[in-house]
Structure formats: C-alpha cells, structure tokens
Length: 123
Image 1 (cartoon, rainbow, N blue to C red):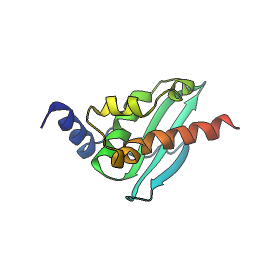
Image 2: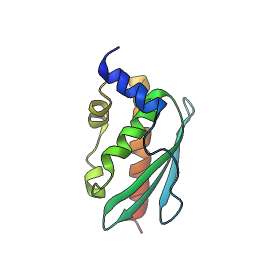
Image 3: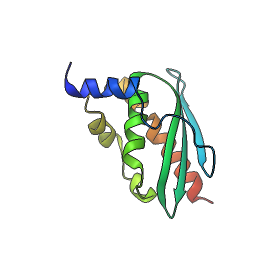
Image 4: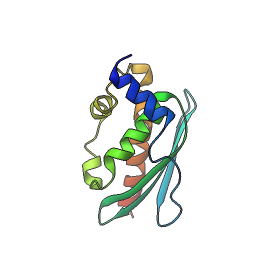
C-alpha cells in the first residue's frame, strides 16, 4: 500500500470536518443513487469566502476521503475559486487512480458544495 492509499484510508477512518454546523450556515444534500453514498455539506459563507465547512453522510472510502480532504482545502477559499476545481483536482488531491466507475464517488462532495454555492449566488 502506498502513502496516498494510506492517506485516503486515514481520511475515511478519521474524517476531518465531519459533523454539522448549527448556526449561520447554509446546507445542501446530495446522493449517488447508483451506490448509496450520501453527503450533506454545511458551510458558513461570509464576504464571498468559505469561513467554516463541515460534512456529514455516509459512503465508500473514496466518497468520505474526498469530502474530508475537500473541506480542508476549501476553508477560507473564495467561492469563485471553487468553480475552477474539477475532477483532475479531486483526483490529484486523493492521490490515487480513480476509475470511471468511482468518479461519482470522488466527485460527490465537490458537486454538493458547488450546488450549495450556486444556490447562494442565485439569491
């Protein structure tokens, strides 16, 4: 097992930013019906930046590790910068090969976060 696989497993077993934000947060939920993974993202957005972010839900190691790593990466990031994050960024962040069948798992958290941001920008 290489170091990247170990990091994915560590984020899966000990996810960072797991939980809910109760006050002043916006949230959205999404699921991958093909495998049952589900993610809820709670975020506090102030002055166009992600000030706090947490996730909850359940899923495979790739889905949970991706959510854990993503929430670490986007904290204090401008929401407009998040629009530029794509599958290649997620794959690099995870550091493991993501086969086509697991792409939805890897992208679930990012797609959920982008859904939340888009909803907020439309207000």
